Length: 405
Image 1: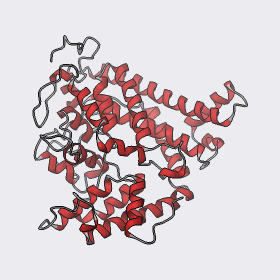
Image 2: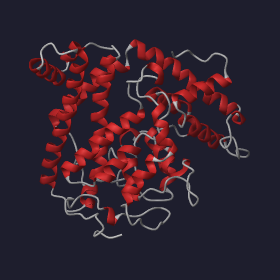
Image 3: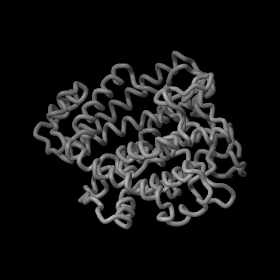
Image 4: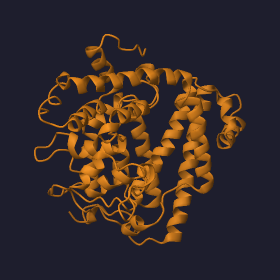
């Protein structure tokens, strides 16, 4: 493929990821005459089994609490839209940004963060669990669709962005950073590093950074929306957060007496717009000051290029603190979290004691494997479940499945 086939870089910034200069795939494939490598990756992700399962994996609320609350799939679509908007404004490769947004939650367990916390606790003796690392495991190993390889055989840039979209994972001398500083890198990342070097000590592309911050923007907005519509807090309680208070005053001044549903939507969409516009302004300022002339300059920087301004970063943290107190720690949400935690823990314990209780192919070929390898197989099986399937599996194996209705 060449750049004369409609994939030219006329509008792409010099520091953007050029799809025609991809580092390639672990298993070499012929190029497509109609799609760039990142467009192919996007299509492979959308057609994967893991992507379809996102429809029945929840964020905060369990799947049957209401059809209007977000699932992992609707969240992923929202992140994708924001990521493309940021990429377009910053003249990045929109397809890579979209691709990373679509893939970022593929490794999430059922039942949102509670499922992940319980899975990490269960897997603590065997290397722990991290949803980001599990996403890598999904696209490099667990998807079994292609005749010539396991996984999706995604481009190097897609895998790199998926693994380290929040920044470098290790220092230049290989020591884990951030949340892994006191432990070690997750199992899936350490294992894959034996096959392909994803340069874990550098920043990822600006496209990956755009997808990462799009995730934060979407999370804040839709958890406000879902929390309000679920009655977990009242609109006026948002006045405690200056950023939200300003938006609320703007809406009420322009539309006095507006019905609640429209009022909520006006608040949420203004929050998204303000954050997106702030990221664009701040990122352009950083890029101008840094002056990158290639994507390698982006990777070699000592800080993120796509980021909130200091003022917005402070406001965004205040929004997260508000949501933590009003939504994630709400007594109704905590009550459900306690029940779903038991579902995940019971399933893990049962399958470790009786691996044959898993269906084929999960139970096949376990003879002679170490306890840690069996645990990883059990973990992969449970992590891939939807909320509904996890409940059904618990009901199949136990007589006391909690009522989440």
